[in-house]
Amino acid sequence: MKRSSGILLHFTSLPSRFGVGDIGPAAYEFADFLAEAGQRFWQVLPITPTSSKLCNSPYSGFSAFAASPLLISPELMVDYGLLSEEEIKEFVIPDSDKADFDAAAHAKETLLRMAFSRVANDLLNDPVFSQFIWDNMHWVNDFALFTALKQDFNGDSWTKWPEDIRERTEEGMRYWGELLAREILFVKFCQWIFFRQWGQLRDHLAEIGVELIGDIPIYVTHDSSDVWANRKIFKLDENGESWCVAGVPPDYFSKKGQLWGNPVYDWAVLEQEGFGWWISRLKHNLGLYNWARLDHFRGFSAYWEIPAEAQSAIDGYWVPAPGHKLFERLSCEEGCLRIIAEDLGHITPDVAYLKDRFQLPGMNILQFSFGSDIGICGDALHNHRRNSVVYTGTHDNNTNRGWFNQDADEISRKNMLSYLGHDWIDESKISWELIRLLMSSVGCLCIFQAQDLLNLGGEARMNVPGEADGNWGWKLVPGQLTPLIRERLGEMTEIFGRTSRID
Image 1: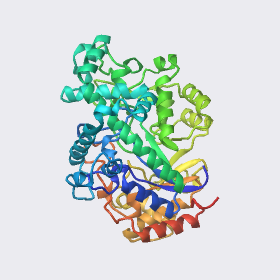
Image 2 (image 1 turned 30 degrees about the vertical axis):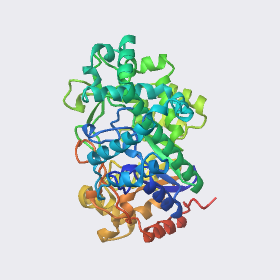
Image 3 (image 1 turned 90 degrees about the vertical axis):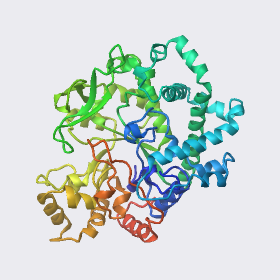
Image 4 (image 1 turned 120 degrees about the vertical axis):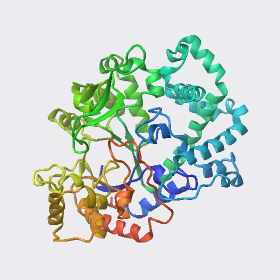
């Protein structure tokens, strides 16, 4: 990875006529903005399907492989001849700086069902659709049946389904597959449309020299097609419930740790099976993106396991994981691993060794660096390593301005000002001062949140770890990323030798 820079902005945060951003026209406009500003990378959050019942979190999905229908562009379906411009105009939602997930879900499902009704009878005879199903057979059939079943059972968790389909008996799979055949086909149609649009966007990005960085959560949601279809690779009891769950011990984000509640992997079973499910998942994502950020990387060396009945993450304990064997297997099949290791939090020498052995770039967060240990802090600018991806803050952090006003203590503010060479600074300049500081890092890649280009405060924060409600909703409105911002970013990028135009 050569010296470069990029922007972190999830698709749902793009401007949109339909409540949430998607991979339609606004995605192309943002991609062009990046290229014109000399940016080489666009980092996004997970694209897997979620819902309001899961707090709309991209890290809580119903599948580790499928994509969210919310990200499908109605405008591009007009280009395909599946809808008319007049039809989609009826579902336009007034744009704002907050995503309206519920309204978007209603609008897009209605439009998708309208389009599906026009092709359903001939869909199975379409060779392109058939090829898509064949290429994705390892996940799409289970996901489509799972989604159809959840709708038929009013959203109930799979552990509450009738025994024959909960246990996936041969008779149950046949019976429910036939009964819900139409709905199963609709789910597959939605996935086909998404990945068709995804391929177009990827082609455009390749043409203009912008690469995508995706995000792979280490854990999956218990109520997902992955757990339902692969129970033996998770630590579940005979009823399919987790007897232990995932989380992290106390850290910067939470004094009580974080009790995520996801089922943890039975790594012994995974190893016996040659890590097949994980290899498939990683290869799937490395096919979608140029690079992938592997969330909670330390969990591949040892992970924090918490008894299911525990009330907080404090009651957990460390359990070793066979990360070396997994990445050995993956590197044999993929060669150089295009993976960014999210190595934040409690990092021990074994985690650092795992990362360095496979030459994976790690991460540094500038906002973490201004405490009383600034001289020796690994996140401090003077201690960065070349093989690192450096951020002012990620989606889990406040914006730069919000951090300075709300999160930073007196010592951190004082050290930041000293680092910048100021006695005082107008808060309207804080965000770009930190961007400029990070641009000078020796780290090969620096990433900024789009909110920080706009110098927005804490109201634009994407996520507060440990809080279930009120996250993921920030959104751009048309025209916010002005030509002046593009020029300023481009000039700064070129000064620090990060422009994509430099060979």
